[in-house]
Length: 200
Image (cartoon, rainbow, N blue to C red; front, side, top):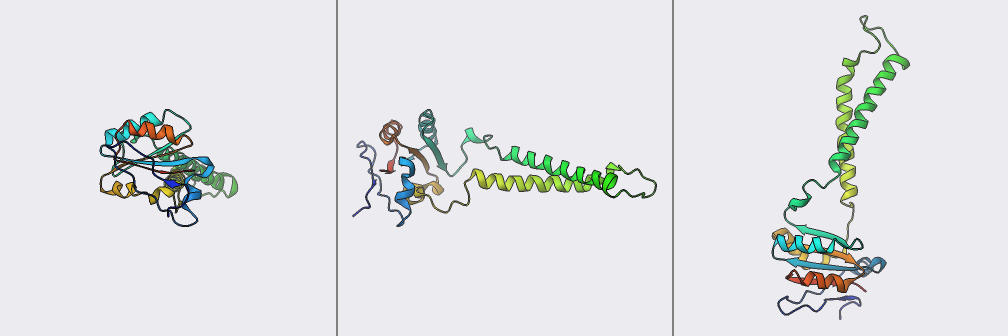
């Protein structure tokens, strides 16, 4: 007997019935419809159909839409903010390193070395560069983990049979929404291979 709350929506004749999701005990059901939202997963044969369905569903701001494929969608090539975070980290690290050296050589512990002025900025360049690189790397790593929601060890979408085809060239759309019927109707218009749902 299937756990309560896990079922497949009926779909038209040209769409095969979805496989029933079998969550791990104590995880799947609670995570699947936390906050009253259902989790709807649809697989498509082409990338164009995936993008068309995602574009239509994203018109509703109350729907959280995610796409999964073996390649990066072309319309998201410049959509990440990680490069901006790395730039900010580099600026903070570089300016921090430069300011630290200025303070040390002009205020904190000035030294007369070969008659050079206290503010001898060319000698600050190596440490400034290294700290800028360090700041960029740290900001990039932290930003990537935050944007990718890591560490996120479990998600009910992992139980979907459709997700297993992503790494072999499949195209999968995942929608989290309280209006599961409306989402299903929108997905059917784009001729999905299969629709699976986790919800109340």
